[in-house]
Image (cartoon, rainbow, N blue to C red; front, side):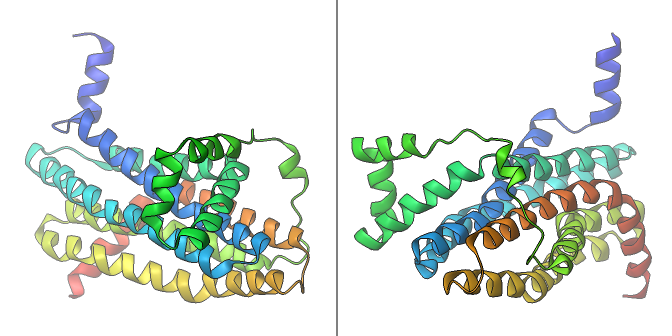
Amino acid sequence: MNYLDITESSFLGEVSIERLLFIFLMIALTNFIETTSYWSRLAGVRGQKIAISNSLYAMISFGSRTATLFFIAPIGGIIDRAVKGNFDPLHMLQFTLVGGVLGTALAIIFMPTIVKFYDIGVERLEKDGSIIRVFKFLILSKEGLSALRSCWTPPRFEMVKKLKLDGVPKSMVILNIVLYTFFSMGAIAAYYAAWLNPEYMARASSLSPAINAVGAFLLLFFVDAQSAIIVDRGLNRKIPMEVVRSAMVYLGISRFLGNILAIFTLYPAALGISFLTKFF
């Protein structure tokens, strides 16, 4: 057995690399799609069609949020194998969280391309009145495929130079970092807490959906509300488009930072959840 085999064995234990990669890719996909919600708002403000833009994003994001159901169960499987095999799954869980970092980073890097995609989607949705017809046009017609190719815009460093903090609520950006740290790792931390405290395993793992719900609630009321105000002001030309663009990009960047922090706060969060389970 060579060094690579020993390292892989100690890292994976009884968990297959396919399972880990599946979870990693699902988390990356959901984070990529959900980060594009910021870019859908930009497309809506640019085209003065924010309601249609939000509707298009809601339809697309429904599929990504449904995908969450597919990776939560395999995470529970990792914990079950860790308990039976008597190995620590912390590094495996941290590895899966890197998927969130990757997905968010890709959404930020390809922001110009995604905004153009939403521009086309909004225009076609207004014309066709059906998301099925929109995708049929984009995928099955020459005109649609040509339109998709025209979306491609190489990322440029000048995008960073154009960012401005003036007019962007700093509290919103900081809060988004904190909340996405909590939201990204909260459910997984509950599962890891089950491994830390097998005596209360059922209680700890059952907190996973509750933590997700609390995270979504806090994001909705404390971050989305502020970002909606910025979008509305941009729509009514009360603030420059540059401020709206900067605000959305900073929200994407703060989500990226939150995903990074989630990797390092997974263990202490699990310790906290493990402690709390004793009182239920």
